[in-house]
Length: 145
Image (cartoon, rainbow, N blue to C red; front, side, top):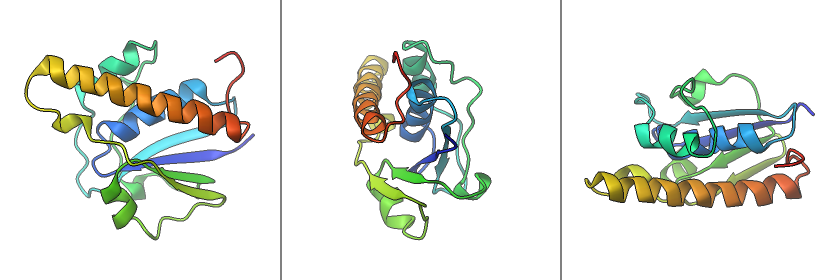
């Protein structure tokens, strides 16, 4: 298939990492998936992002935060996941389509770990629903997923 999808968020620590992990699991073979942040200093992946993906059987322990400049080449689809990234990456081109999904940042869900984890799960499920629908509409959804 050779389609390339890039998920962009400001810090590349939660939403875009969750989207990358889910898309790798859901997309048809041959679809290349990456994520990156618009921040110049990406931090480590949020531990809850790794945990909520693990709950879906997805190992994100090998994913790392990247800046936009760290992901070479052109992408067929660029999907921004936060309003800040959509505003600050206006020159990031997509060969086919640029999409924006305004998704709240789960990393700012307060200080209570259980509340944070519950919010990360909500965000994961929201992203998964959007991805399934979008991948199916573009005939990029892996069969039997």
